Image (cartoon, each protein chain N blue to C red):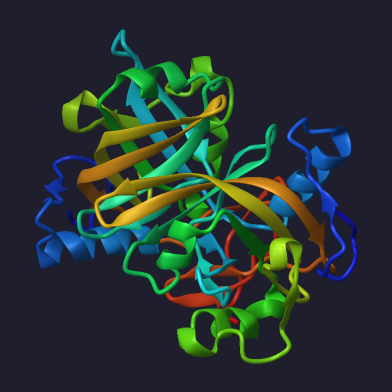
Length: 178
Length: 178
């Protein structure tokens, strides 16, 4: 992988993930911006868990389906692997501090009144731009990760706001339309 | 789904996809911004195909894995369903016209000199911020759609640029960091 015009010859990314290959893959993905979502669930003991996700994508509108990716090493994986339902939240510009909470110390993500109880007793974050409760219909294991497919069952829109983006390890909102 | 503060009670999205439910799901996803990628492949006749994707996400870095979603009704699905390799391109602000070409009339997406031949004879778009050739390791069918999992094998970085975003049916780049 060379930092020149995008044309062959190219340098391979190895399966072994050498430091250079790993860096190249990470650099390529750093050139991609992503919207910020938060996924919440209940763990097997009934305690709320949640995490920020930059992999949220729509899969279909009829029926309403969404996907997100996660590492099985993530603190919330046990909950997501065993529960039937999750809540997906769309984060707006005003939710930047909430995104920090939900990507901070896992033991303290639900300390405070920034959430309430939603369908199935699930934690629903307050004041987000939209939330959608859904049923997990597939968990596709790939190495030490999983693609999670959710069929949306319920939801609500909050006050509108610019969307929260993550790019180059910083939060942004979109600039003017091109 | 009500356009009020994000708290229960909520209105369900039905499997049947009533016009109101469908609109609510679409409105929720419109509040999410996404980076713009282009996926290219060769169809069974060896002709180049490609499409813009706003669902591209990293799944893992070791090994380097990425996912994207597509409808089986998409013009490029036959190629993606039968081929072993694809190229994923990260689109920058300067590639906005290229994004228009790759989401325009499928019969004319490769008319011109905006692409070249890459690994395995695959079409590689010129002047993107990064491209990655990969092997399809999973195609997960979900209703009339598929989640495609790709293991990255090669790639190159192009000149750096602000990333291209899609939000509310318009292209953007990120504004200042929050």
